[in-house]
Length: 238
Image (cartoon, helix red, strand yellow):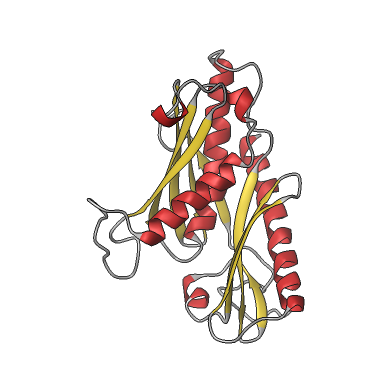
């Protein structure tokens, strides 16, 4: 693998990752994740009820909301007040799907976990950082449920994490920074579970199509990176 400098990292290296658990004292679970310069505050709030559309069900629900502060980016973005943009909706759904894949909803029972992911600083990989940080917050929320006697066992069966990969100047790279993301020939987000199963692979060619061999190489690069993230999550939760 090439070691062309990119903020001092090899192409197959993650940025420096930090998890700060309990970043919000009032939430049942919370985590500030920092990956390079990107910072996302993730909270997991427990409601001991279900949304109206699931009324009467015995299984639980996990859902997510995502937002970005106006000056999280290089230029100010307007707040999404009356209408949520398409990109935000897509990311919220991705985070929700990713976290639900890690759950036994019957064990969660008629309860809801609401995830909020707020981007404080955006330097690439905000959606993947949100998933990775939210998993830690949700794990702590599930520990709260067990401590309070609401569930008999942890309904979160395993952790889930995500990272980005891409092809820049013909080279596959892991965990793209903003300056890489904006000029990538291929940009891909990968989500996987602790057990090894893939949850989501979102890949797009920006200029030239990519080959099946390149796809396989990117998925391998991404899942190797996710394996490192999962170890870091476990260390943070220890």
